[in-house]
Length: 252
Image (cartoon, rainbow, N blue to C red):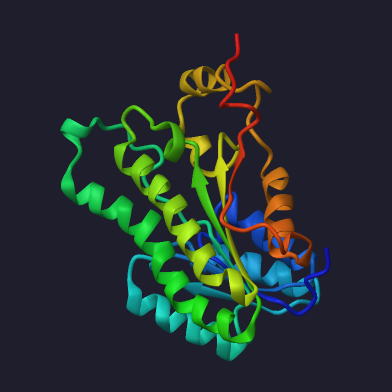
């Protein structure tokens, strides 16, 4: 899949999954904006690795929940790399927060919704108009099976990821006649990032619910991201594509 010269913006680009997305898109031909909230040094390392491939890259510190920071980052990307063709909303927060609805603190709810749902709204709001004007664009939102199945102790995370699927379908409708697609990847368990913060005994319990009995490899996910970013996926839009190793299947 040839994405030569396309410009991609990846939020959460310094993380375990996001960094793999950045590198995979670069190998496919993209110039990449690696977006991070706190870990800018790690983001710069990813950007440098992309430059070593002969691509252009920039590392930017940005809080996705802050609309002004998002606007400033998009302007910088356009100035340094060019108009954004591909947007990957990968940043997420609160996945390992285990708090019941009754005990959920309102400030934690607001923070989780801010990153996981308001964040993608902010980036789409900034990037979609240009994509519509140019007649081509790809928006890929990273959701979760928590958004389709719920999750005990994950009210904010599950609600935000469910909302992201609704936002995906709406953006797909708004872009459908202008060459812009928007899809969501509904993730199960992947062996990176927050997975490493989960206690081993809970990891074991989670894996028993997965038909394949293993967490996904980040590269397995990234191949789908690249496909959805490509011309080959041009007739796929508004979809919530589950990538979970069969976590939604009844298994013994």
